[in-house]
Image 1: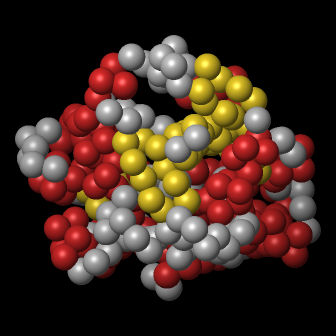
Image 2 (image 1 turned 180 degrees about the vertical axis):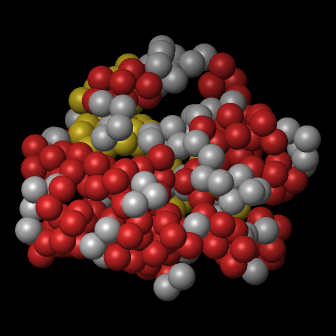
Length: 281
């Protein structure tokens, strides 16, 4: 279930990240930003490092350098090359392995009719997370820090309106612990992709992008054989229901701009910074 302290810390970090991303915020001292958040410098640094995966100073460096542009210049992933070098599908998400299967187009057209979807609220490194899954695997992860819990619930349930939704967090707990790195799973974490055929092609391409790297919407369009469908690719990326595990946060514009993020740009910034810190960029 949702934890009040975790939710409070995420809201605090969201305000801190927004402040650090202003023109004068990028040169603030630890003491200054901690004072604005009404915390001691040591306490603020501890909480920030826990949630963002890096120190406030390191995060400011990413912002000053134009982190997304740096990633684009140094660690952009050509998806064909990723497939050829064995980076696709397997090791990603801090050494977590995933396996996935997709719902058939016919089943998808029935909009979840006959499908039982279990759901529960969990803590995550990015604030409260609404997780949904079927007997086959996780089919949805919504991050509600920016949208609020009601909007997150409406978003996911609205994707499969004819399904039966059953609250049962214990049914999902093992998968969730593995997904957010709280448990080292020996078996792959199963994902069940519920979407239109074009969307699933895009989500499959995202699964090929290694941790700490990024790709562009245009590169995804090329990879799936629809080079002119950049806008449609962007829409499909935004409709990804399984945030974090299907890494839509690794898709950016060819200019180096972050683009949008369905669950809020502060979340996307933290995800990219966290992965860069883990991989040493």
